[in-house]
Length: 179
Image 1 (tube, helix red, strand yellow):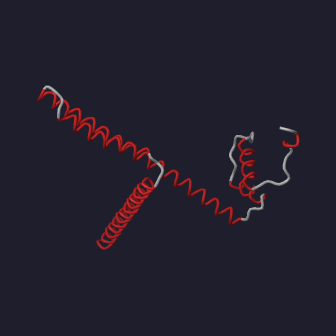
Image 2 (cartoon, rainbow, N blue to C red):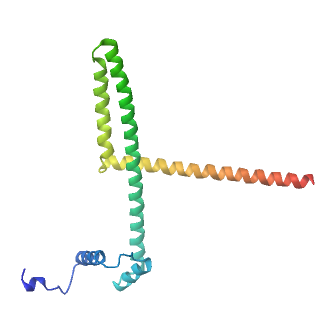
């Protein structure tokens, strides 16, 4: 590259500014993290209005929350696959043993092994497939199911606490009335 190509530009596109700032922050010698106040100061220096900054921060927090949920979903799917694989192994070992003991050779148990194995391999593929419409639908169903469980659990906890509080209150009133 010639010296003229290495000269800094006078103007940069928004994408170039983002890339340069990301590199500068990554190369920062201070290993500490930036505080929220420092982030807002940087935004003010870059002439970013408060509403845009708040919206960007909310969007970032939402994406972090969704990423965490997707990681939980991936762990859930792997656990399900692990359970299915263990069942597959246990049942097929039993069937192969039964088939070899009863007939001396393997015959019918191989069909079960292969058909069930095909289904298990499709489940395996689906477990590690984390893109596409089918994945999104499965994630949305799982997320809705978890939210419903959480809502019902907190409602049930509230009912139990209310019931215990009313029982304690009525016991207290009965004790006072007995005096």
